[in-house]
Every structure is written in C-alpha cells, then in structure tokens.
Length: 204
Length: 275
Image 1 (tube, rainbow over the protein chains, first blue to last red):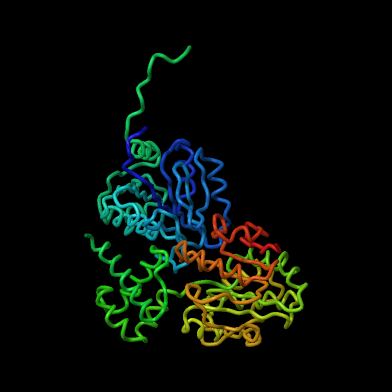
Image 2 (image 1 turned 120 degrees about the horizontal axis):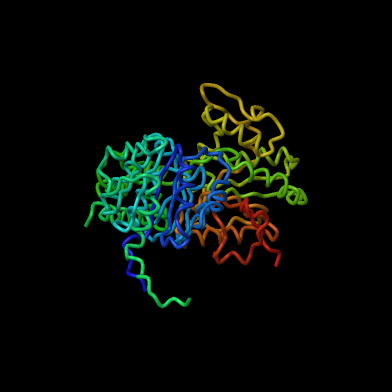
C-alpha cells in the first residue's frame, strides 16, 4: 500500500509552442504516472482531432480527447476538444461546455483551472507552459488561493514567454521550472514517497 | 466557511426558489457551467450577492426572464461540426427519404442555428416539403429570436465555411439577404420549422419522430436530468429513428443505451432498435 497521495490531479495550460512542449513532457512521463493530467492547448476551433492520437503514440501514457461525464483516471491524459471548454465538476467528473470564449479562447485555461480548483482544492497542481497572451493567469491564482500548487515554466525557457510571464505577474509560483525538469518535478510531486530501497536478494 | 462555499449555498437556495416560484428546474444542472453563467449574470445585474438578488428575482418575472436567458442560452453555429452534417447528408438522409413524411425534433434549439441548418440540408437533399422540424427550447425570449432567423453578418463567414465542408450543394449566400450588419435567413426555411416551448426537465415526450437532434445541450445537465432527457428522446423516436448527440457525448452507461445501436459512432449518431 502506498501512502495517501496529496495530489489528485494535474491541470496544464499552454498555447503557442505547446505541441512541441507537450510532446517533450508526455514522452518523458512513465506509464506509471499515478495522476490524471488534464490539458488545455489553444487550437483553432476547426482543428482536426488528430493531436490526441499523435500524443498518444509518443507518450507511454494514454492520451485522449476528454468526453463529457468521464471520471478522470490516473496515468491518463485528457485533452480539451477543439471548440469546447474543459471543466471539472465538484464530484471530480469531467464536463464540457460550449459557453462563449474566455480571453478569445475556447477551450480556455482559466475555465479549466478555476473549476478544477473548486473541485480539488489543495490536492491540485496547475502548470502554465509556453504560450501567447494571459489565459491561465487568473486560473493559477485561483488554484493557489485554494491551497493548490502553482508551477510555471521559466519565461526564458519558453518558446513564447507571454503566458508564463503573465502568470508570474500575479504571484510567485511554488515551482519555476524548465521544460526539461518538469517531468521529474511532476513525478516527485505525484509520488512523494521515496522509491523502495534496492535489495540484494534479486535472483541471479 | 469560504466565500465560494457560501455562494454555493446561495445558488442552491436560489435554484430551489426559482423552481417553486416559476417551475423552471435548474437543480439538476451541472455546477461548473451553471456557476460561471450565474456569476456572469450577477456581475451585470447590479447585485453583489445571489441572496440580495433573490428577493427581486422571486417577485419580478421580468427580472427572472433576464436571469433565465443568462442561464440557458446556448451558443452555437450553423453547421457546427461539418463532418456530422456530411454524415447526415450521405448516410442518414437516404433512410429518411424512404418515408412519405419526416418529423424532426431539435431539442434545446437556442437561437435556431441547427434547426435552420437542418432545413437547408433536407431541402438540398430532395426532401422538398416532405418534412417538418420541431425546434424547442425552455426560454421564450430565445425562441422569439430563433423565429426571426436573423444573425450577425460577421458570423456568415464561419457558417459558410462550415456549410461547404459539410457537403453544401449551393452557394451559402443564396440562403440569406444582408443589411445593417445582419443576415436574414430566407423566410421559406422558417416555414418548415415549428418553434415551441418545451422543458426537458419537466415536459413530456414529443410523439413519433424520425430524428431527434440534441447536441451540446445535455452537457449542462447532471446525470439524473441527462437520463430523463434521453428517456424522452427514446420514447419520442419511432423504431429505426435516429438520435444525434454532440461529438463528445455518448450513450455509454445510460439506461436507454440498450434501445439503440450505434449508426455512425464518430459522429455520435445512434439508431433506435426495431425490437
């Protein structure tokens, strides 16, 4: 039995440069990553739904577009479908909405972060990666206000510094990270207990 | 107790009051969207809290009507998800054409975009005057807007792209005339559509439909209300009738699922079984 985990989910928002960033992150996380990961990537409303398939191919994790009413599972990545907001209900289930764009974006990072903060409170980590604009800044503040963890990509490390820089203006994150260090950071946050010590009684 | 927890209590109390005073039941609406919509309404209402607003909302039907529109209006487009409309044209309409007359229910029609899209598609595919579309919504104001068939001209570019990708056979501009930044849809389309008030949370089935279209409406409902609405659609459909949901909705795990077979699963088109 593992210790009860402090985190129940990770939410992540990104825009310009996000596809490459997600490819790097998701191919580096092991299939045993215990948390659900919910992602908003700004896309054209008319984008084809091929990205989830590509990321699924690159990643040891299962990657899919979120369906309405799903209960998020550990080791699974849920992408916001183009032209829908991705939300978490208080019971932890996924819901979608076609409400108007927020900051000209649907899906909007703020909508995901704010609803996830209401659902999971301190048991949530929010991550802002490369992107233009300011979507996600208010949402990350909402996560912090609920006692959750705020993680921001160092603007100097980001293809597009807008979203990370904007998030930093609203508060100091718990972790300022590079993309390369992010998989290790998420793993250590998700599995805070040290790995079991190596024993000498392995056969052979 | 946090401000947010107090607000959650206020919203539950207000929804209970609205139900008792006006009969509109939002108690089974999914909270994430409802809370955002209510907060948007509150920000423009002049009130600071829902408790303050409640006294006026329960006494003044006009104030309530504005709240209702704020809560319920669904934003959509003509021919949203072109691949779905292409599927309707190529795979569903050939079945519909075998009937002498076709009845279609667009449930939760909001401002009417999908009902008009459907009318255009069926005309182009040769149904002529052999069909009627029943377009229903909970909100009278929204229905009045839908009946006008007037949309902002700036939306026409997107609607045109959708229409073309969805297999449109004409020039989309044939279907509207423009003036003063608005587009007026051809009045003959309206004659194929009956707009009517219907509440999926309270009202009964709508008889003998060949196709029910309810896309991105039930995503705003909690599980019990979703079940209720799907039950109405199941009862309303003739055997062999088609049920069209939003692309991210499904019948998985729903009590009505055994009554349906997937017809075009990626487009979320289901068909009611004959037995």
